[in-house]
Length: 112
Image 1 (spheres, rainbow, N blue to C red):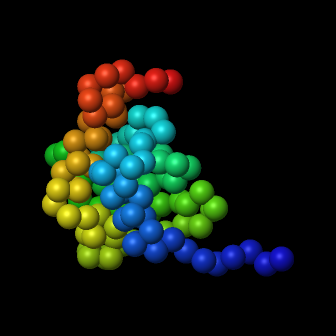
Image 2: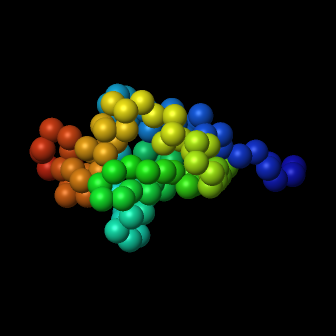
Image 3: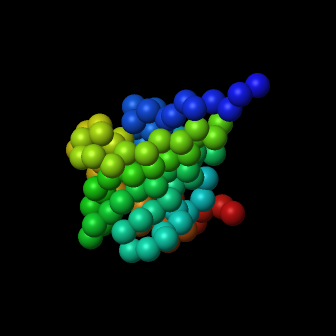
């Protein structure tokens, strides 16, 4: 059996982010911030790296699907964030600080 070279499409990663915005999927635990501008979300075994600038979501350079496939986007307009509506993007942005504080969107403590 040969190793698959399939990659994650921007549309697939966008759907995961959209589902988080719509409360269809939940973050597994608080996002991991590797520095002030990069955050890794874990959603249903997906690992999605997001870029922020002053609290504004500006891009998604990469992700890893549960099956091990990866996706990488470097040009403007090709990453999953560019597919989000303004409302969806605002919902994701609102989730990031709450999750980083260990709270869900309702302000209650997240369960470990």
